[in-house]
Length: 80
Image (cartoon, rainbow, N blue to C red; front, top):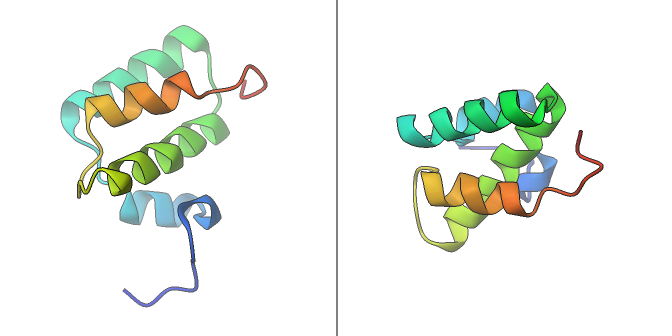
């Protein structure tokens, strides 16, 4: 795809939905974490971007449970 985005951190909400394909089980984990931790929509997108990077480093086309779980571990306290 032709885009001016050089890295995952530059993705906006539209690009997140376009490039961050999430497995159903991983989506379920993320939704549970969002509810339990009372996270914002902005944090949701940040977690997906970090998860996409983790998946990229592992050579995965989709974001899985392990990618979401790892991204959640990196979440600083100020991401609320």
